[in-house]
Amino acid sequence: LPECDVIFNLAAESDVDISNQDSSKFIASNIDGVRNLLNIINSRILIRADKPLFFQVSTDEVYGTLTENDEPFTEDTPLAPNSPYAASKTSADLLCRSFYETYGYPITITRCSNNYGPNQYPEKLIPLMIEKATSDEKLPVYGDGRNIRDWVHVQDHCEAIDVVLHKGEDGEVYNIGGECEKRNIEIVQTIVNNLGGEIEYVEDRKGHDWRYAMNISKIKSKLGWSPKIKFKDGIEELINKWEY
Image 1 (cartoon, rainbow, N blue to C red):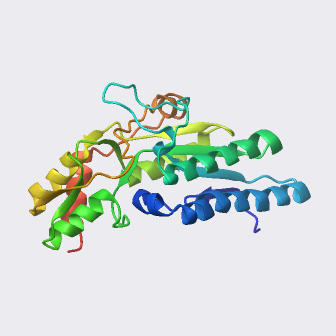
Image 2 (image 1 turned 60 degrees about the vertical axis):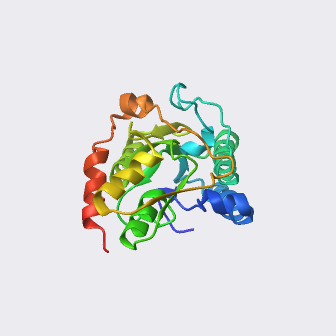
């Protein structure tokens, strides 16, 4: 392993629908992949006694789901994943925690809400809907579209990671979010209002989590980070700059 100060693990299989059909790739990548990294790094520590930080980028989905009236997730919310994808990320987080507790290996975990922004993989809601709208295809919406997600721009997420890297404490978890809860149908309607298109309601996803929302008071108060990009500005810029 080359000399380094920090190892970021941002890699993951993350398509919930695919994980519901076959979890094998998610176990291989999100669990075994993290275990392999931790074992390789830990072996070097035992030989060389130097400890680069292992930075695990995780997801709000490890907390499960909220009702309309529940308080947002905190870092102390019990882990209760509801999809094979979320379970694989939860397992990875717990592996990281175990290496911190057992070996004293420096670990930091961040858990972020839904991202959006340039170059996002088209399986995700916003790029998928933009692609459908610009291709004159119907825009598929699960169930009644009222499920709620907390949205943060990818630039804000990256800046939060940088803040945690430089100011965060080993062994700690930090929630990252945009404090911007939107129903899925609101997002899709915004895209339709800008680009046109027809919404098509389809059979709901199995085990579809109702609501995600992040309490980010810890990263705000302890590290001084808060999101800067307002969703209205971020989504308009994304739509206007999309390569049709």
